[in-house]
Image 1 (cartoon, rainbow, N blue to C red):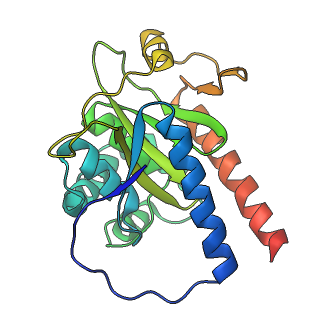
Image 2 (tube, helix red, strand yellow):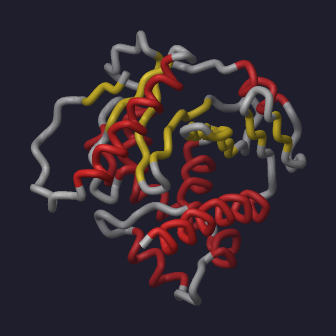
Length: 229
């Protein structure tokens, strides 16, 4: 089940290849079925480069239009913790230049922004993926924090995930997945555990290790797209 919230019309986008669009629609339908079996639904947010911040805003207050506020808070957190984040900036981009770019509307969020969002909101993050194990960014125990639930589409878009019975008025209702509770209850900086039978991916890592795993996933997707051209 996909639910779209009422919002202002966005600017027209260029028409995409029909075959690819149809394939994406099929993937979304399959993703919906996957989450439906867990009692969950996808809340679509606008795909305008702000999707991570829109999905985060929906999770925390039920209004994706507050995305700019969350972008600003994430960037400010990174600025305030420069020594923690600067080593992970790629392509030799100066730290200040990177942050200035990230402040701009439409700039895609990367792995640093997910980590920063978890830390400044004091919430762990669960990222659902189609036919793949879930990603977890766990910085707090279950006694300290709740869990933000997002879904990641085709390596380029985030949506919000809520309970099927959630009215979507206000913050997302808590989602309890048994494995989530087990993950959050463990100590910090544990090794990665993969449970193939249940399709779970448990990552309770240091910031460096989390980035390594996320970068690896992104690099693989980029290579696949390059050779598909």
